[in-house]
Length: 611
Image 1 (spheres, rainbow, N blue to C red):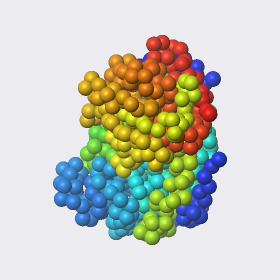
Image 2 (tube, rainbow, N blue to C red):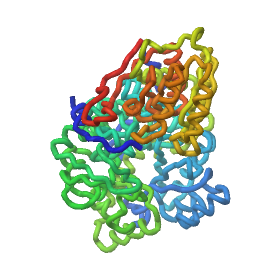
Image 3 (tube, rainbow, N blue to C red):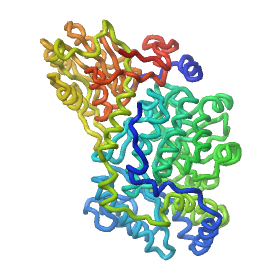
């Protein structure tokens, strides 16, 4: 991870042909539904009136559950469920706690393959409709694409947010979300925790980074709105996150409590525009941030628990009346001050509707039940949140037909038009930062024999990898001879001297070396890897496969590109650019500060070479 640079130049910089994929082709037109009618609302209010208090409290919770099946998970998943939740499977979870939603995770073994996901979704819906008061569930996941993806291949994998920000095309961004939304809907997933609406004005941000569209607020706002339109036109609830803005943090809220030092005026100018654009686009849900923002609320409480922020600003000032969902309640950022029994109660009092993934569901569920029974939270306040949640479920067609089919999966998920769209969108995001002596594009006749070396971080499950192998394979398919050599050691991106020496030896006799780097810091041995390869006299092409800031720490490379992610789709696009099969048209969506003086900008927003 890079050390935290000064933000003066970065804050200053932050303010300073499309593949056709139709809704008909994705089979999702039927899910593009309108706002619930007055008759719908009356029907939903009657439904709420029939619910027991326990059922009402359950509707507020979105919970994880282990297993590939709603009723018959593997024994290890049964053990995990019993240990963490006190139930055997998803069906028992729903019967006991009446949860309104379930979130899918790869590590919970929810997302093995498309047919399995569809069957799991159907099993969950069957359990929901078997309750005393039948209610379909809202199934959700984090499918941001790029470095965060819970559903992998054969589903279509799109570029992540910052890659899309490099092309800044509303149409490409909308298409990426439309394809992703159609495939999620076909799997029974009707709420996606995307897009990220944070404006990444801090290069050292440890948790947002390339998950953001960029550092220019208005540009981010345009692309956030495009993704909202894309997801929701495909029948999936979009979720703008993380309100009131997580882009200028130096602490990861999974492990600590970040502090935002922006003034109220800076918030209006830097952080607010994407959320305003999402609201104007009709966003279904907004996720809260576990961070302190004293200019918006001087109390020592994270935004998730702040009534001035969630009700005073989000509801009243911005006029948002959709669903507000917490970020995971298992994260350290929301658990440092209060116990797990108080956090969900305080979140509801602040203005939250959905309580996401508490660490111990029984503690959270009983705490909310007790708060309503003893009058700390009025039941009518709970009813307001439930109505919002049920209206969202109505908009997404869950009351009409919550089930999916294998046939629908097969004609939607990973189909050729979607894969072609992903490739075309991806190659328009690759950004060329350096091209000394016009090294690129490579001449296949004169520079045929290539070595691909560098870091091989673990890719999001199902998204491919390892990167050096994927890149070498892509270059071979384009007519080059390419050898892959990883310099990683386990999960460590920085190579040992032994790995560097091996890479230097392998470079001898090659026509060019392509070296992939990952979050290069001032002390990273990845710097030595690049400079040592350059000293061999073999032309070095540098590829930053996560944050584009690596170039500020690199010396000796004759060419440098940024891909913003190491997933297969973006690496294949970079290979086509290197080979001259596609032109580099991406432009930096963030400024890159100098490595030796972070107050100065090395490459500004909008910089990018072409040929």
